[in-house]
Image (cartoon, rainbow, N blue to C red; front, side, top):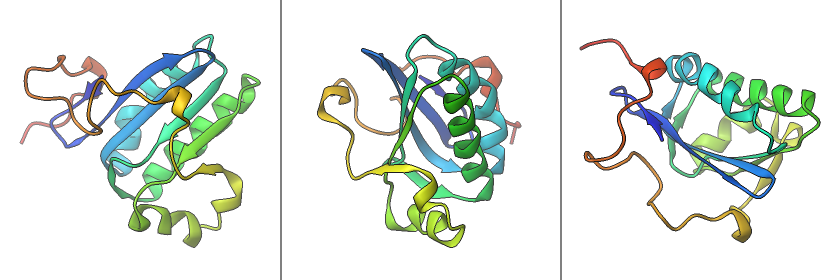
Length: 140
């Protein structure tokens, strides 16, 4: 799990030949810049296929969409496929406005073979793992 004090982060896991990235919180330009290097490492695994779950995302702006495009480019360059689990209507609206709905393989739910019942979607509880060092946000 990777998170920071800014209210965004991701859970990751590998199931068979798929990497599952569950983004949560506000995925904006700050989140995109902070999560980008970690996501790049995660998609560089031996699991060629990637599923990005947007259900726990509360906000997505063009910076977050840019992160998803970078994920798609990285996965495709490695010979894999990217599937995106639809988020809330407000999150998905940006895909429509940007004309990118057809650019991604969109799923209504995560495939059951990849589902993880070990945690609820969203940030880890306070006793959870420490934040990833590359995701430390600005002090407020």
